[in-house]
Length: 293
Image (cartoon, one colour):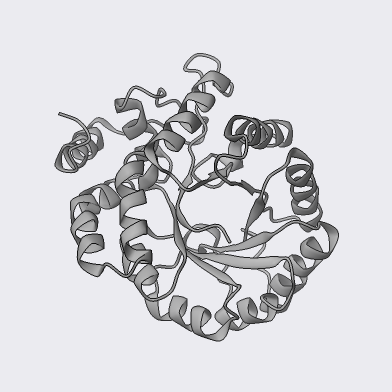
C-alpha cells in the first residue's frame, strides 16, 4: 500500500514553446525524493492532464517512472470521460512501469452511479494494475457516492480512493465500511490531517509541490497518531493551503514552484498565469510557511 505524502506533481513547460520541459521534470522529481515525498502522481489534474496530448501524457508517465527508478512509487493519472480512452491510458501506464493508476470520475458526461460502477469495472477488468478511484465533484460535476465506492472496493485491483470532497464524514464512512486493504487518501489539503488521524493512509497533495518536506512531516505525524505535531505543521501550512486555490489549480501552485527556482510558471491555454494581485497573496503565504524570505 502506498502511504504518506503523495505529491500531485505539476508538469513543467518551456516558456516559449509550451512544450514539456523534460529537464525541469527530472529536477523536480529528484528534489521531491530528496525532500522526503513518499510518492508522486504524474499527469493528474495538477499536472495539466486536460491540456496534454495522449502522447505527451504517456511520455510524462514514462519519464516519471524512469527518473524515480523505484526510489518512490509513481501513480499515473489515467482517468478520462471516455472509458475506452481511460483503458488505453491505463494500459500505457502499466507498460511504462507505473506502480498504480489514479482515475478521475468521468467529467462532463454526468453518468449515473451505475454508469460509474460499470466504467471503473471495465477498466479494472481490462488492465491488471492497481487502480485508485478519484472523486472530485467540484471539478468534474460528477459525484461518486460512498455506496458506489463500496461496490467497487470488492474488485481486486481497485485498491483505494482519492476522496477530494473535503467531507470528513464521507471519508470516515468509506474507511469504516471497506476492508483494511482498501486505501483512502485525502485529496483535500485543508482536511487531510484530520482524515489521516481518522484512518486515511495519505494525502495526494497540491501543497506538497511547494512544501514537500513539511507535508511529508505532517503526514508522518498524522499516520503515527501524533495529533499535536500534525496540527503544529498544518497550522504553519494553512495559509499555503488557502493560497493554492486563489485561482483554478494549477495556476497558483505553478507560480509558487517557480518562485523556488525549479520551473517557470508557464501554462497552456485556456489556463492563464496567476494575476499580480494573487501573486502577492501566494508570496505572503510562502513567507508565512518560511519557504521564501
